[in-house]
Amino acid sequence: MSNKDYYQILGVQKSATKEEIKKAFKRLALKYHPDRAPEDKKKENEEKFKEINEAVSILGDDKKRQQYDQFGSAAFSGAGGAGSQQGFDYSDVMSQFKSGMFGDFDDIFDHLFGGSREGRKHAPRGADLLYETEITLEEAYAGSPKSISLNKLERCPKCQGKGAHEFESCPHCHGSGYLKRTQRTPFGVFQQTGPCPYCHGKGELPQDSCDDCGGEGLIRRKKELEASIPAGIEDGMRLRLPGEGEVGEQNGPAGDLYVQISIEPHQLFQRKGKDLHVTVPISFSQAVLGDEIEVPTIDGKAELTIPAGTQTETILRMRGKGMPSLHSSDKGDQMVTVHVVVPTKLNKKQKELIKDLHEEKPQLGFFKKIFTSTLF
Ligand SMILES: [Zn+2]
Ligand SMILES: [Zn+2]
Image (cartoon, rainbow, N blue to C red; front, top):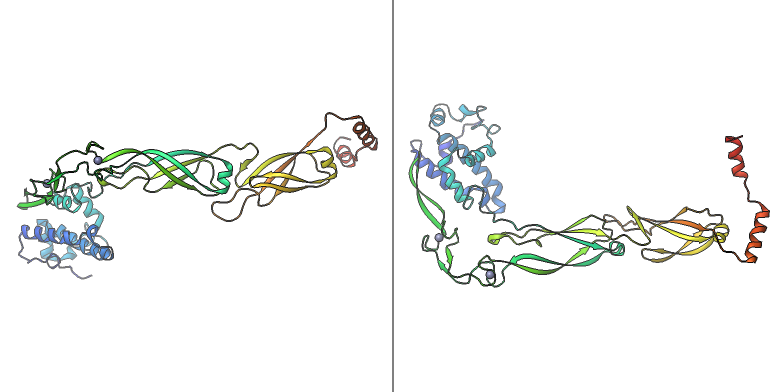
């Protein structure tokens, strides 16, 4: 492993003062901070940023600098890490910065991150909203647009979310949004630039207050939306509509809207996963002789064959007549329970016929076999 030249990395002389090291670091940190890099240069800048952080962590510390001057970067291999690729922990440096170990550098990071150590560059995101809606099983089957009406915070259209109509250049920062402050640090006294606290870095101050939103920039309004319900949706599922939640303060991004679906119980069908269950009555003679009958399905009527000799509560399967799948093109089945209705009122002729049937005696061979093997 080759020795690293930390002086060269920071672009300073070996005789550089702390002040010069500090300045060089600040200039390079601003230049190479990965958060500020264009997308295609992020990786490259991150490497460079790590390198300058590594350099300043040694040269900014008197004792380490002395060791480094004597032994080179090899002095730090494996001991606390700085100097070896494996040992140097970039996130560690970042946390040291944030915890204030390099206290006097914090303001640089304030500057880099746009105002505070928590990272003001992210304006607060608006709240997510939850909207509950009930749909029919037919709607869940077909998939359908569902209109949604809700009250939510939106950017005030009158002032475009600024809260005022008249603005004047901030007299404190002269419209730049930044203020210079003098800092006293162990490295000496120097000028530090930070966001202007009077205008919060905006460079201008409101001269009035918007009537519509009372200066908040946000307004609660009724909004109509349409959620598209996918075919096959299940009870309790949530749809996410990105950016349809409440708008954020300080022009922050909007939250998301979640639409919670519940499906009304159906009068005829019961859903079990992708299958639909339904019970249909058939007559005694249909059960005995078999028949073609019409049964309801979620998608209209369909023909079902009742085989001759169907017992009551038999379940017949109708393939592909169930619910669609959210993730594939197959459909579930419809399971039809046939319920044989025993007639309660018979006319004279019907009674005669049934009596004749009774004389014939039903074939009990099957039952006899069971009785003889288990009971007798
Ligand atoms: Zn200002
Ligand atoms: Zn307004």
